Length: 313
Image (tube, rainbow, N blue to C red; front, side, top):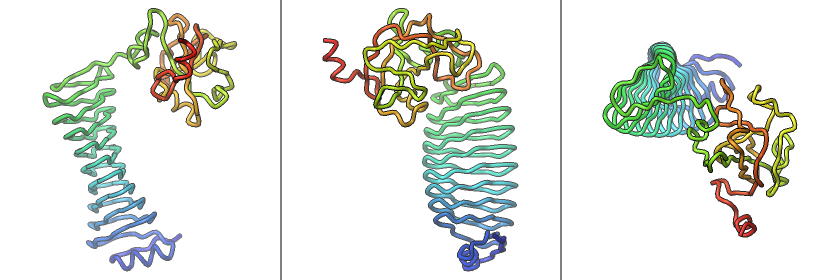
């Protein structure tokens, strides 16, 4: 596949028809559609539609629509709409609208509107408006307005207006203004239940499992209604994965670990039998030694199915 320099839309279309990689140069304005891909250099301009892709260099510009994607370098710029995505490097900049997303690195900048989202790294910066949201890492910075919100990690920093929400996950992070929430990592079963919203009844929590038609988990344990499964390989919580029965605080969360599940089961578990890992890769799940009372089937919202309610009447 050859790289072909293009200065006009006609040259771009010809290059794409020939299966080549178009290199857009000059001051021309181009339009990419379908699954087409191109590189933009110098002060070229492009509109990306559908699932097209582009990599921008120099002072090039792009406007993205649909599910298009772009990677920005140098002092390039992009405007993102709908569900488009962009990855920014160096001193590139982007303005996001709709449900678009961006990942920022280096000294890149972004302005977010609507329900757009951004993840910031290194010394990147963002300004948020409306209901946009950002996750900040390393030494990144953000300024929040209206009802926007931010999650701060490492040594990141955010300043918010009165009704913005700033969640601080690191003692090194700095937040001023807005509504600041210092998030403590759950260390005990009770703290984990409070953090993820698991219902508790005294010393027992109601946790959930996503299973198949035969009520089996992906690893083969049967959670049929009325049973009380117990882990034969219980390791006391030493490992995060394996060595116990694994649960989530909500059926929707359990579904992420078993995407093909067709049924959901509620499992009463004693807090004393739950292990919370110190440094979890999957913090929204815990493991336990056993289920302490009969399981029962629920819907994906955690409500007992009618048959289960009648059986217990």
